[in-house]
Image 1 (cartoon, rainbow over the protein chains, first blue to last red):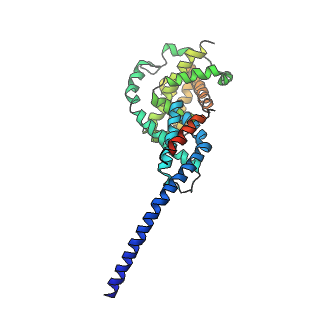
Image 2 (cartoon, rainbow over the protein chains, first blue to last red; image 1 turned 90 degrees about the vertical axis):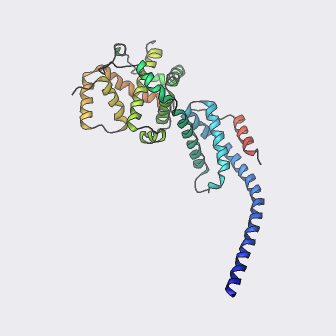
Image 3 (cartoon, chains in turn blue, red; image 1 turned 180 degrees about the vertical axis):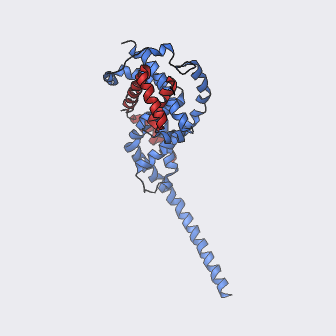
Length: 220
Length: 78
């Protein structure tokens, strides 16, 4: 009998305690939120540029990169409680941005796959035996021409050639060269096989090579 | 035994990603010895790598306007 009484008191006590805790935390939370916003606003000043550069490198589109950075900070505010200060704020924010970019590409992937085979047939570099078609057999030499790398006009042509690729291909090139990610990681992130991955690199390079030959090297 | 040019140039790209099997490796070496067009592709493929890497470093900053916009958005439900 006595023990039941004790248990009853104890549960009642803990209920009361919980009630007070809850009341206190609502008040604290408003305060909390405000300080979270302050912290994040500071982070915008410190890290937004770096985040923007990464988003721009990966997507190549300014307005899109701006949106991705904004989404990153909004998501950071929503999930602030998950940030425990165990990692650097910068690392944490970059993690969020990476997910946002991956989500963006996942949405994109659904479209270009359809166009993939059609474009391939139209724009063939090899005949049915796998030999170069005649027009690909002009030896246009690019050697000793690396000074063009610093040429703005050349960069413009190169960007133009890259933009003509299907979105998925362009995405793969950007992830590979601009982010220097490993092929294995890229194929996993984009949900394609490794074999498919380097085949796309192959085709993308054939296209860009052709595009540069036509627009740049042939003119010289 | 003989690789087609298409297959050879595919292997050139594959080589960057994974190790070729010994057979693939020797067939490619042999093909490149014989075929000047694929040798040309091989060189240009490497230059393309340079081009892509070079164009990789954007030096743009996020405008102050954009930063203010983000902060305003965060403070919205303060």
